[in-house]
Image (cartoon, rainbow, N blue to C red; front, side, top):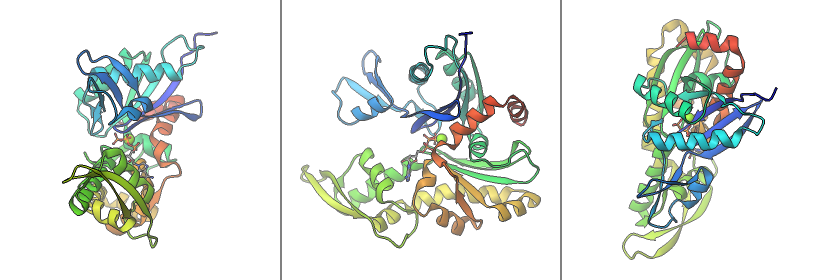
Length: 335
Ligand SMILES: Nc1ncnc2c1ncn2[C@@H]1O[C@H](COP(=O)(O)OP(=O)(O)OP(=O)(O)O)[C@@H](O)[C@H]1O
Ligand SMILES: [Mg+2]
């Protein structure tokens, strides 16, 4: 006894990292690291790094080591994983954890190898990788091992992926390297154009989360935000409303949702009829946007349903796959 290895389902996302172990989410933190610029020494990881964003001294930078769902900075990703693996491994666990990590569908073998290597060097005893839409579908409880077609649309921070799954594998999939971060950017641009006000990324994200919507939701929410006047340079406060956010994000949202439409167009007719009956299940943080189910139903032409716990679906699926060896074998063979 004593030589346990903890099994961790890891959703290594562009915006956040979630870890599932022993039946529950045990960690949810921003995928951010604060470093000294010259020596690249890590000074903070996760939420602590995010809290420093925009208010750190000039010898420090706060970075996101993933871009569009893939590793952009290898060393920093390794440091981040090491920190979080340690954080969730209790003292009972002398051996490194066994981990299942999500990777975007369609990543290159080089990109995949980078994730595998980063996980092993960060202390994982064994690391498995599976595509995010497959794990998200599993986490959302879709019956992916049946011959019937099931469709998932995972709307992440840096990438959005739609896939039709059957018999433990991906039948067709499509992704765009665009997600919630692009919506934040669109809000920043809109406010700059309309109010000559410069706001930061965290403010834009909270506007989207607190009052944002994909379509007119029949309820006008509003929020006061502070920014810096583009001309005078001084701080100024404005009030922004839901319908303004709907307008601000319309363009990138249409492109993101186009990924789901494209998948349906490529789906074999036998499976397409299943999807029309069963609809598409939405996961990822973007699935929490108000009215997104209605918007996708209209745009894609099949009923869209938000998963029960969209934000955690991928990590839950990763944990489930790892804990069910028979399932793991089937999934790994299906890829
Ligand atoms: N209530 C909400 N309404 C709208 N968007 C939200 C909400 N909550 C979170 N988000 C957005 O969801 C995104 C993060 O989602 P998620 O954690 O699924 O992404 P990720 O896994 O880190 O990224 P990726 O899968 O693209 O690598 C962020 O852009 C965030 O702003
Ligand atoms: Mg994700």
